[in-house]
Amino acid sequence: MLNFLNKKKNTEMDSLFDKDKPIPKHIAVIMDGNGRWAKKRFMPRVAGHREGMNNVKKITKHASQLGVEVLTLYAFSTENWKRPTDEVDFLMKLPVDFFDEFVPELIQENVQVKVMGFTEYLPEHTKIAVENAIEQTKSNTGMILNFALNYGSRAEMLTAINRIIVDSKEGNIQEEITEEVFSDYLMTGMLTPTLRDPELLIRTSGEERISNFLLWQIAYSELVFTEEYWPDFTINHFEAAIGIFQARNRRFGGLNETKKGDEA
Ligand code: FPP
Image 1 (spheres, protein in one colour):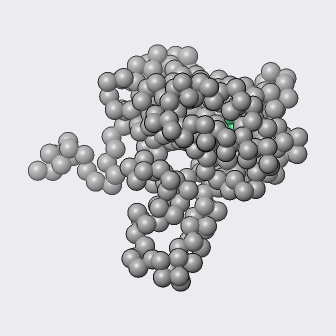
Image 2 (image 1 turned 135 degrees about the horizontal axis):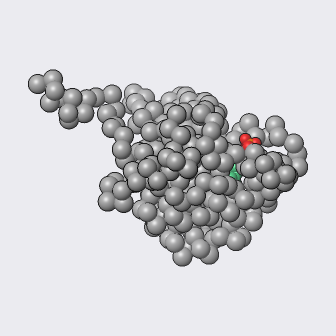
Image 3 (image 1 turned 45 degrees about the vertical axis):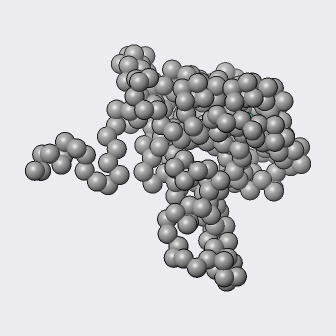
């Protein structure tokens, strides 16, 4: 693992970020470690989630200013319902507070809010907050801030498959199911074809798992795992992760230019 966040290596790794090099168009983040952040400070877990929410504001603003086109944030998974009721209630209230406090700034930043997930199962107040934010920012033309809320990748794929079966039976699909067609049926299908798959996936808090997030879409994403808990993940850490992406050699299963030359 690239442990780029300890003090010694921080400067070295920060320097990988080059604002003149291409920035990943779509960045996805598994915002992990809120609970541990709070525990370390002898605070209740929900205090970590609130601090995590404040960090969403900072990272969103910075991503938009760097020119990221889509920022997808894993805010609540289909498995998170298993947590204690108090915590689930708090997490379901967070979008209400977040959008109340932050929509004016999102409008100022020209950021468009989107939400993917099984939103029909969200409590009414969460649904309303989300729908209002989508409506209020729908004419913005800048970065898409895409929240994964009650999202799970396996369920997303099964839903897509079942919709494909229904559409086939009804005669609405004549063509073969290609990767592009399948991608259209996924929740990220609402993004443009060039933006659907994240180029970079970041997970904070030292865990190195994907946790049922965008399993299809990350087939060729660069993965960066950081030690920092989400509330401690600063814009410098964000840039450092982009720097690691910029330094990597993405081949998509092919050969890079040097290798091709070597072979010749
Ligand atoms: C994982 O940390 C985090 C979550 C399940 C919730 C993420 C939510 C936020 C960062 C705030 C979202 C903000 C909005 C606007 C919806 P964890 O609780 O599993 O941490 P732990 O592994 O340390 O216990």
